[in-house]
Image 1: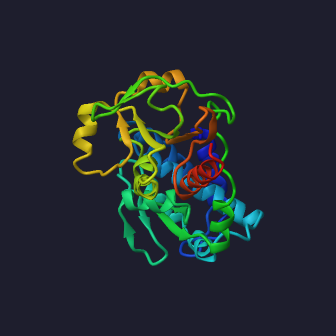
Image 2: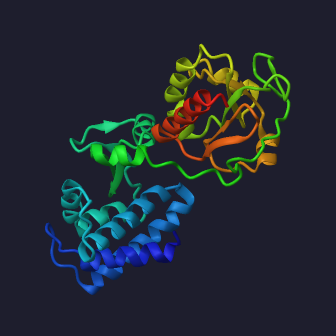
Image 3: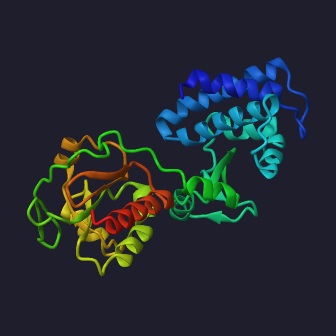
Length: 302
């Protein structure tokens, strides 16, 4: 979002908001706050506080939408939180020269969650996030919404068209095993494109490990994880991360050739070498559809 758009939204937000805990906001107040936000944004270029500015902008958009086009799906708890934001709170967070508090994930009981745990919760799509000032509230999705989301097929990755033949490069995993057109012939191949610095990639590893475990008795199913990272970095990371796919390191050139620019990206290839499934998203839905595709291929002998 451009700075000018953020300032405009914040101006709308502050001018329109009924101020419960401080005096009514005048035009001069609005100008002062916009000026304060502008100076704070200049600080952000130096201090990397863009996340907070994004949150304030999202607050403005959420509040504006809530006031003029009420969203029946907005949780009442979050609606109430948005209504109680005051001029003083905005000024406190945007005052020039003052470092704002860090963004934190909390649930509706105000319990704080580590970023890694919050990423796992969000990648599962069982929770949605709502930013309110420097807090990001994790709100559980209704069961009906979870089922609807899970059963809707994810969009195919644009660079992996279903039904097209996949041309295997020669790959060597970190244990020295070689994979090529001969060794992968007549097998179902599941490929995960990922890298260590990708939060959603790491968050879904437990679900991917369960896939490997559930199909370990079938020698005709191969799980490959092609990483951007070096072997050295992956070896160090695997001391703390358990990933049961066969890991291929230094995948820059292959990802460039495949035009992979979204992570994680998942691909399933049938025994004839054709693409049966692909998506560029993480979480339960992608794993659900990988499993569904594998089951369909094994039942059809493909």
